[in-house]
Length: 207
Image (tube, rainbow, N blue to C red; front, top):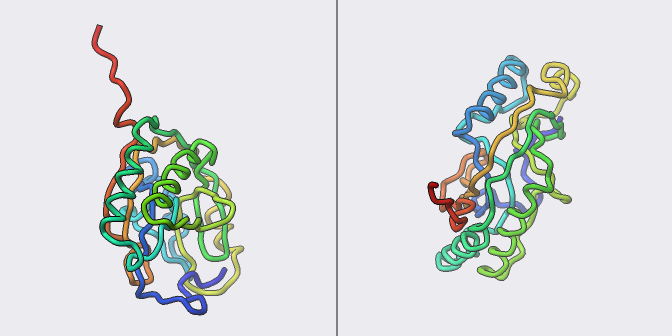
């Protein structure tokens, strides 16, 4: 394992970023999976376990807050709402554990069902800010982080404690949020806007 919080060369931790997140802090099934992982990892040193209210899936890093004007933020959110107005809520499967030197994560898949949402916020970001935004990983691998590593050390004890699978769960994603990541080196953020899917889908009248 490696220290997730170590700064990269030239990185300024005080600069906040605007990011598109799918949020899961109020989803009881995701919170339950996080509780199971917390119980299994309890007592292991070197891990910062993500509290339930901060559970999220990073979709796109739009850019630094000081480089995107308020009117661009408003335009970006408005364009995302128009693009996602005809998108149905998405069902994803959780349960498979992913290991990275800096984090322990839940796979959220299949990625193909989430890609239309990614493409919508990419287009909204590009149109409003003239910036491409960037993915957290290339290629995009949608996941929910359960814990961050805060030190260097062997991964074997973590893998032995948590295993490769948690109980399989299917959850529904019905919105994406634009957030401003807090300046401190934590997983916290400040909400900016929420974009719900399917706001313009026709509603069948009662028969």
